[in-house]
Image (cartoon, rainbow, N blue to C red; front, side):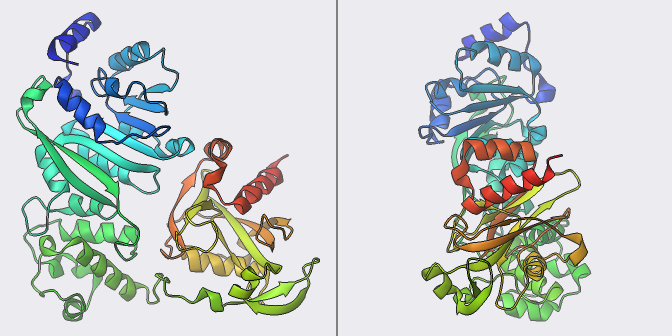
Length: 455
């Protein structure tokens, strides 16, 4: 889409670029084609474009066979996009502020790739929203003000390096790939633009840490950039000399001098001070756990190690527990890639094996503490069903429980990759469209839970 085409469309629509919406239309066709190419769209993948405007980028994705979601804040342009894409059944246009878009609705379409020429005034908010966990997004290509692009990709001890670098960088790798002059846009902004590509970090790259605590420490550490970090974090009452020895940093260090890994290590250190007993249980020898072996009537007939139970497909016991919040949304966890069953799949709020000599109910309460770091009284949970031991359940007799809790939750990275609350109607659509995203046991648990709610 070149300059004359943009001018003609705007004239036909009887409109002009709106400064308050940060509208600068890309008029460089080569750049538009190149930007879309950075998504590396594969057949069937979901393309999400934020602020498509007149479709300068969108037109280079025509022919893509996967779903395409366009989110446009300007009602005039949203109507134009609907009209020009009416013949494409895979394109859906939302007239909506991207900051009000519910990212959870993307899950039912599978992995997503996000594209956007972001208005400068909301770029940081949009970035944080679309990179926040949980998300099905696996690649983002954004055109930003050059200064913002440099901040995202900055190295420690540079003037560009700051809180945003770390908040996004904790889960995403950022690559600054190209600079565009103001003349590439209509109207031309007074600054250059930078194009960045974001891809998820490998879960093994950094040790796990409490994400909420990491965000808090980073924001505090950069709230007054030139002050020493020990002063900025004084409210945490840390043994600063001991912390500096443990992390190998100077006592006079400023936040801008710490690398991402050092900020993670700092968070883990503070986490241990505040809550002794690490949630990072990757080295835990789970295969040594002892379970009760049961017969076809769920009567205990012996004991065996976890390894022996699973290898021999012996009947044993487990619990699944579902958590809803005050809105009725259901919390799901995504199983860690290190799990021996259903790695990387979405599962019940918490689940676990019943240890030898332990009751089902006691296991449910224990798992809430071990996996999500919350404590509930026995009377706060209710049993809503049972599943018989079968190949579907991994030869487990499963008791099903429910409780209400609004979070927040903390989980060990060895057990849970991420988690979040989801509206039940969304979950039903997601499960119908992509049942392979979920553990087989959870699908049965969910069905029993919904049946238990029927009038």
